[in-house]
Amino acid sequence: MSDLRELYQTTILDHNKHPRNFGELPDANKKAHGDNPLCGDKITIFVDVDRDLVKAVRFHGSGCAISKASASMMTEQIEGKSLVEANELFLNFQEMVTSDPIQPVDTSGLGKLSVFAGVREFPMRIKCATLCWHTFKAAVNNQTETVKTEE
Ligand code: ZN
Image (cartoon, rainbow, N blue to C red; front, top):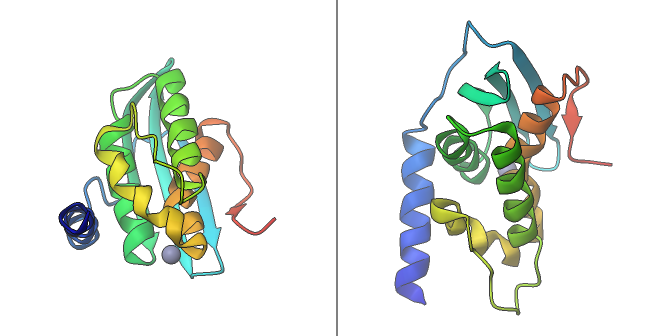
């Protein structure tokens, strides 16, 4: 298990240090802001949606390593996918990180995103990991209000 943990940490730290798809997207036709006041994470997600396809996605903002790595990996996973597929991934991801930490984790269909299974043990961190997903969902649903993790 400790090897696996190390791999998780290495992946998350790598994405935090070198976030993929970081920056603005001038051609974006969808955009939303997200805010996780508990931790201080702020994010903007830019999406270029072509019919039902996520043609391109970028993110911008500042926050903790988990929130940044999660956004970085999310953009990698959903670019090129259909909105339906992206939403399915979101639901699987959400289910994984909010599942009971003493139960075996179900990472089926999550691929690289399964590195976030570790946040199950840190309730404070769950919102850091899911902020980008909620913000992405808000963007594609044309929600103009800032997404807040506090509700
Ligand atoms: Zn955070």
